Length: 521
Image (cartoon, rainbow, N blue to C red):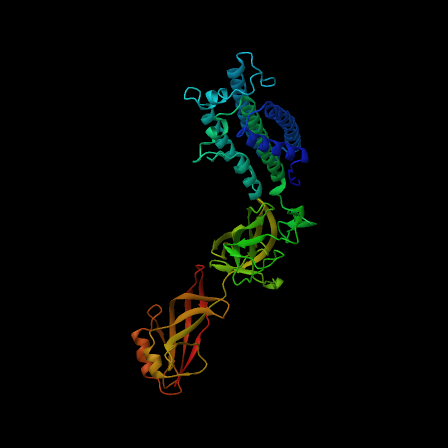
């Protein structure tokens, strides 16, 4: 709504000029003609007051009508306008009552400001306005000061504020013919004819309504001052996620966005200003997980004020993955922990759940551990994902449950590089290394499964000079003393065998392992 500029009409300017001229003439002589002139000025001011009052009513009606259509937007400004009109009406009525008191002081109880009999009475105005008993002038000055301060607070334009302050000024001033400045009420009403005092008060009422009109105009204009102007409308689809799983719901907000391409808002994310006038937020991703961010848009309004509009969102970063599996190799081993990786693209790990038949399935961080029970029965793993508060089945996978393969027996020793090594036969082994070894171990170490077994016992078979086999029994997993003595008698190039190796695996099954041929170097 455009703010109008109030200009005084030529007629109003003439009335003001006549008021100044007649006031000056009072200092010289209060003649009948001069008093008649005040009456004419009074009539003109009264008509002007009525005209300004109708104009103020029209402005208030516009604000009231707008509030009826848009209460949320217009109500704060209409409330201020109501308060303004109430204060203006009280001050206007106070001036009316003072005019009536002055006239009745001069003409008696039946005195009428519209028909003053003793127009040249120089005492009545002073009695009402300046006498200690009545003190109407001081009370009026204080009321005008309060009203002026209130009206000025409602007007943003500095020029109009100055105009209102000047029109309603109650500062002391020096009248022509006086030496020092007088209080406002003394300068206005001391030795003032009744008709002149009434005209001065009518002029004050004119100023009161003028100030009211300026403030009402400013309030009406302020209704739209804080609005954001737009020159472009666009439709946007904002999905909750661009990845949707079969069985779940696709959700998106379809909105109409209005923007001002000439004055875009400033965007702040996590405390930092976004240097992109189109609001494009981009950043690199170096780790996986769910990340939250928040910020606000700062919008500048037409009245110079600004507002902040907060927002928050999140995004999920996942590893680039592809699932490749061989159907024939879907195998789980009974009795041991089988590490598994279970994930659903686009869904955080915390929202993924899985269950298994024929065994237990537990999660340790991002890794799942499957421990099947019975060999020969299949284990079925069912994966679900929690999406929008619902558990949605994602996939079902079937695994064959097998017993662990047999381990390989070996002699542990420390190599020349200081690293542990395993002798599994088939190549020469120095007698020194053999004698330093405490016994034999067994394990599955095929780079897929690395599982240790407990050796329960074994035999060694050496041969004498006649080729006779000499078996010796171990001390559990350790070489017995008789076995070590037999090793000492072996010469270079001789062979012996470790056989009847019994080992127990983590699945609780005892196995008989293949023999190991040892070549003594």
